[in-house]
Length: 259
Image (cartoon, rainbow, N blue to C red; front, side):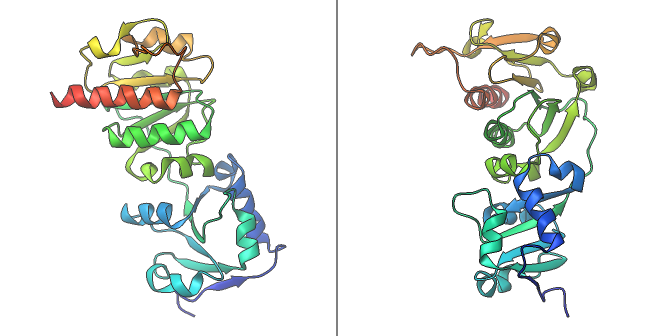
């Protein structure tokens, strides 16, 4: 048997499949198993384009004949799962037809002087993934996630990130005191306080601190900030979604950097 020859799984009681189901559906299991799950060809392709070599490629049985040419050589091992069992892995309304199991990357240390996004207890996985996409798009290559933030490598965050993970330095599980090595100005946002964003000369590199959806940044992070800004909202809304605010702020930094 060659590396391209698949192993077939047809039983829901298969122990490997049970572990994979937990990995695919629970947001913290990746830490226990030391593995991550990517579902769908878009995420898998994003990983491959960044030079990632998956441990296992998993295919729905009906998709395998079409996938074999493009995907069979990408992983160390190929597993073909009965369609109904593959659908049982998915948390999506329309399950993907393939996925990768990857080894969880080794946790890096914070790099001083890097343009960084600090996530201070941002709990919604969709928000976290969207912020990672904005960070990658606007040149912020380091993410510092404080304890209480949704798991950066959880399946929901990975889906929302749409491949951004593989171009970022992701550091999670930090306490506020561990941000000290950053050595760049910290900027916080507020709905009602601070200077208007569009009137500021923004430093580069810097670290934007984005806070909890309801509570905002913690007092400890606010005390570390060199600048507090607010986004003009002439429409009169009380506040912006944190992922929307992040996109505006990170874009403003990218524009200021290019001037």
